[in-house]
Image 1 (cartoon, helix red, strand yellow):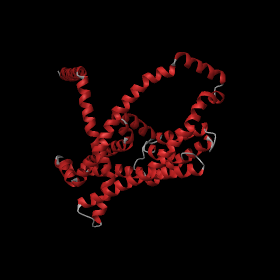
Image 2: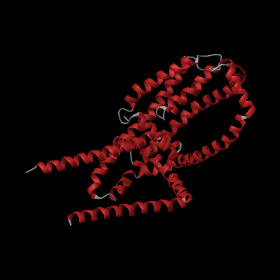
Image 3: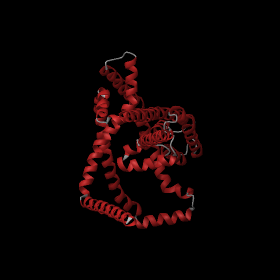
Image 4: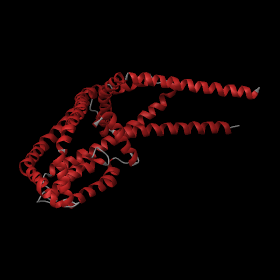
Length: 373
């Protein structure tokens, strides 16, 4: 009878799991039939959540400055917030005022003087410098000419590229436009919003979740503040070094180093490609080997000196984790996902460590209770 009872329990469990599996497949099948509807819902959620995420991350940079001013007696909140906002706008405007004319001038000079040289090089001299030999170059060139490969590729690729850029650029632009408004309201009522969020948390978990929020703010905020400072430092250093070695358009290339540094690992590679290609083709200035060496040295200092000093160990994650997070969040949120992949991955790591520490604490408590007389 006992074995029969155990067998019935197993049978009931199997039936239960099979019912759940069939129910899950049924829900999945129905959801697939309305895939366009769910895509519309997900796009709407993404459009709403991206500005909120941007506002949250930006508040982690700005709010400590506001709290510091309030501790020094600069208040009320509206005054300290207005002061920080005006100073931020002034710094951004000053950067554009001094850098934008120089960048525009260098880009104009490039198209007026060097662009035609590059075109001529591709059409003539590239055959002599082709690394795989002239014969193979002639075969490739003949194949491209006969099949009209470039034109057909451009005809098919350009519309898709424009569509992809439009679909990601417009939501990103809208999120950036909404960011100041969301940020002002969020920072004005920062404590009230935190209290409202805390009020919906059960009292039993309130203390633990408050600790989790504090860790998130500390880790992600420290990373973002350090990353902004790191971008400015690396961009400035790259601009100075490029000028010292005699690289033309050093301001554009230096600013590119600073901007792309927001993308871990890939940023420095992306920034190194344009000056190396330019110096390989250009007849004057430093050679590509020197530019490559400069970027390798910058990468070394960024990874081993600047980043540990400025950001510390707040984002000490394995490179594979960061690369996977860039691919994952980039596919979800586009350019915004690529930029904020590292802090979002850091947030997930904080969640994981917090849950693991909670489980260890409960295990110790249970062991202590079992060992107590």
